[in-house]
Image (cartoon, rainbow, N blue to C red):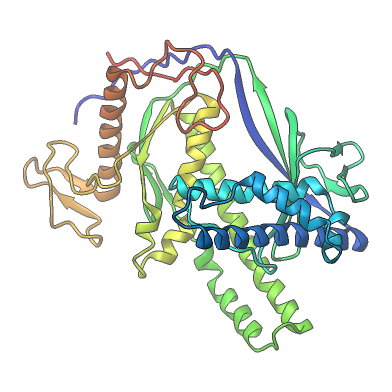
Length: 421
């Protein structure tokens, strides 16, 4: 293995940087407020499902014509006409802007589908998570712990952290377990330069036995929250299956199952946030694999363990946190055989299986830990890729006003680069 590269972080001064952050807080509505929220949820869900069906039917009837699809403005005009009908007068009792936001969400779902970023939009179910967005006319009283939104009395909100920046909109949601939340989206302006970072470069190999292994030899065990909760989950699901559907006992058993799933999800999310922030704070550059979650979940033997690991969410957190804090983040090709290549001499071993956790290189006689060797190869490939980008001018630092690819909410920011000596 070649000597580690000497790097110098030359992140340029940020002229203007906008970061969009969402602050999620717990809500405690009373009975009257819960009933009003249910009407809001149902109306937003009705609008989304109705106009999704309208778009599907319109496309089937006008396929091949000049205009074969509806857009947001077509749906908005149809919704205005729909609200004037007496049988749909209940749509006027809820916040009209939230209904328009549901149409915006539907239009965004279609755009993401045609751009290849998502699947075709599905109809919303009343038993899943419910939500609606309030784009305007809401106020937050942090001292008294009250959130005021249209068509509703002030809601009790628990402010466990201060809100930063300018509030853009608020999304009210109800989880399947019956808990209510408010997610406040804020735009945070940052005009100060990022502090000079310490640490070096690091390569990450994600796995199932060890959640992550670094090129420095550090191993973080996989917590396997779902595996640890499986026994209790099986008991609760058996109890649910014995109840008559839609009965009161069935609803109580369903809530117990939903709360256990929510607990597992919260544990996993907290673990991923802790690990991603620690890596961002300790390093100047991070390299990882660009994993294809859909392909990995195709194998039924490891699908549950892969879902429990949460690799996709972890990489997404690394990407946006690196952009926020000035850390360089790069992903290498998912099909690069990082585990099968000797990081010292480059020998490629084709017969390596998942059961082989250690192996010896027949060329240089080096003894390898499978995961550490993969992390070292990822580090090397990441360095090569970042150097090729720098030389090709893809990571430009001299052009102000350019939006960085993959970095959400950045304006007029220069990409961090590394000088190789």
